[in-house]
Length: 199
Image (cartoon, rainbow, N blue to C red; front, side, top):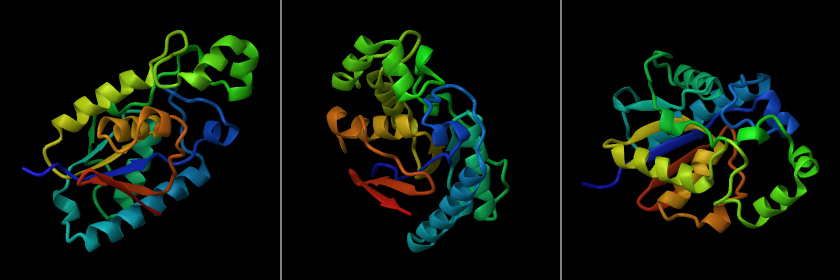
């Protein structure tokens, strides 16, 4: 059996994204731009599914349980003219937990703990602030999620989980993925061991 294709969408922008604050597991809502980005991602996905000859009504749709991902999913499904609430949730898709750093900007993190901040710059994949997760932890749960997927799937989640999935599937390395920007309003297609972005 061939590996499933994942149509992956990062949630739209929130006020904390706009301010450069680490959200992690905090449940922050989409802002107006984020809602527009989510609807645009739905339009992009509609074009991709039509191009690929896929029936949107037969694909599984799954989202992170955080409200920014759920709201994005519902706007995506609305753009596809599908029932907005007919999708699943999977906790493995939640964002990386930043622990005590959640709500902080990078500048605030550096001021609060310059030693830990400096360590993060050189070991981002394997270190975590107090109460947080490492990217290596998230990579493992994203691998576990991917291995449980048996059909081509539309997933709405986060920037951190996108990076972790890229590494879990051997598309990127921890060093190359750690600071990779993940665009909002785009669709990332994981398939055949490759990744393509459409926006």
